[in-house]
Image 1 (cartoon, rainbow, N blue to C red):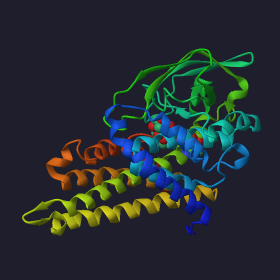
Image 2: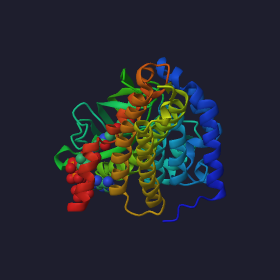
Image 3: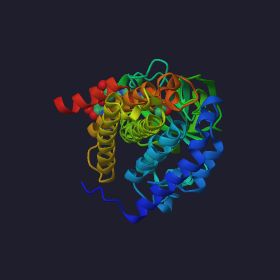
Image 4: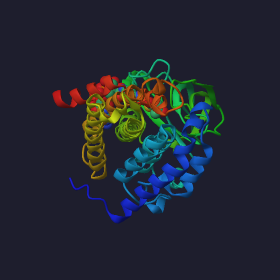
Length: 379
Ligand code: CAA
């Protein structure tokens, strides 16, 4: 595995880091406090070419690769985890699967504006009764002439109220189990499509998490993504890619926790000296740094596998499982190092701890990742 970055990759990552530090990070606390979706940040990301990093230029992207893209997600999440997940969902589980699996017409119609950042993407698989058990889809799609008619409710949809294009899973044949599920490209303007309730969450408060309601929603047949009955595999393959970028988001949160801890430990004095001089603090810092490096290594390995079209399901699940635990552990340590101050909103530590938790839950809980890893080992 050669992870030596090219000059071009380094330029993209450097630009993303500068953007994250100067424009994204300074707004993170306000975005969190006001539960505000940072529309202006998304517009700037489009201007900078960050909404289409792994998509070829002929389809509106920057023509780079998945590794560079996940490294950018880490940089953004280090500054603001909300911004990291907006890009992650837009690219990994909407734009990229359409690019990989879509017809040429679908790519021209949807990937081009998505990769250019003119449109925002989302992924609608989860339902009230189909969370970890993604196969238990209740949403139906019935063929009616030139359209499929979709009925059902999706929930916990990231980017829900702001996305223009959704990949939606629905049952085309309930008798066939997972082989009766199909995926569709659905536009927010299609008749019968509406956005339902917005969730009030523990963290990632600037990220829009909503229900999507499909009521006699008419979707043209040409918007079927993949073949009829292939939808479960399409969704799982999308999640294989999605889990790498969520893992990158988790590494970004963990790195921000370490950055904040190092700065505070040097500045805060107790017993007449900076708390950084105490071994208890030094050990926490050393453990955080080591776990972060290990998690980052898994993320980069998974992205490299994906870029080389090698099997990635197991490594992607490992990266997501491990990086999410590292993010939660490091952010918890960051609050501890900050002491009472860390429990207040005067410092970012409490926000990092709230933001970290969901990385253990969405795009497949830690327990689901372990099932995927064990499943591929014991098959
Ligand atoms: N790639 C391609 N195909 C795959 C696959 C993958 N990664 N994983 C499974 N499949 C195929 C299997 O090979 C199998 O095909 P065959 O029948 O032809 O052999 C078929 O799919 C069914 O597989 P399983 O029997 O393993 O299916 P299952 O019902 O046992 O489910 C599961 C497996 C891993 C538990 C799956 O349901 C799962 O990943 N659940 C978690 C769902 C999830 O991550 N949801 C998050 C939604 S997105 C979100 O969080 C919100 C957001 O906006 C970010």
